[in-house]
Image (cartoon, rainbow, N blue to C red; front, side):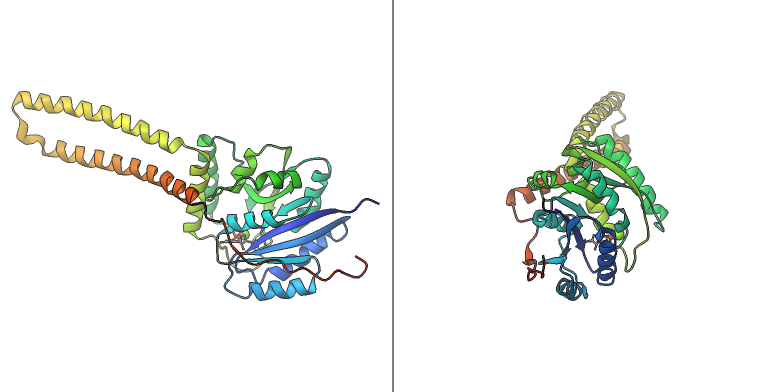
Length: 317
Ligand code: UDP
Ligand code: MG
């Protein structure tokens, strides 16, 4: 008899103590009847409430549950990376632990995997109860990102996806720090298929993505996938050169007319225009330099404080 194929469900969690038991039950319900040897691998991203205690208890009572603890909060993308680095399944599914990535969809993702797709990417159509601000910024962000990105990035693409082991092994070779995983995976190729879904509201707790975290993530998507901002800075530089040449002509003209005292406003306009342009271009450069700095240091993307606990072999297993 061939062995059952293994499936690892990777779940980054940050202060999700109230969600973990409910989520675990929902995954068991979705996968229990399917012929897979599945496990749930939680990656605790430095939670400060009772998540770790809940995870320890769940790990003890549920043979299929494992948990890794990171040494501090590294962010969703680093926690996902850690999970993908440690997942041993023939298929690995990454999803959020707050029920916004419905476990009921798991059988459908696995069915597509069985059909031979190596990456099954879910596409969030809408999120119930999300603010108009988040919906609009997300929509136009992806439009803009696709305009400038070197690889297409699916609008509404979430980090709820199934990856075949081959794709996971390939993913592990990407070691950049400021990562935007949905862009990385989109660029990896393989046989990909998309599954639309509607994200319900969170089961418990509140979103762990502050505006600051969202802004950082949005910038990672742009600067990690494109050097167009650098090129645009160059064009702005060229443009301002032309403007300054025009202004120079004007200065000569005023000089010839003998009206040199009247130059104050021209001077102020020039100063602020070129000063501003230079600062902006320098800022863009600085962003890339900062990223290079982080890469050359080559620090680990995350540190694991506690590895998964091995369960005693189950009777009959
Ligand atoms: N998360 C994480 N580290 C963080 C922030 C979030 O591991 O620094 C986890 C969080 O616990 C959840 C998933 O990432 O399982 C998605 O976060 P959240 O639901 O807060 O994001 P939203 O759905 O609001 O975009
Ligand atoms: Mg969520």
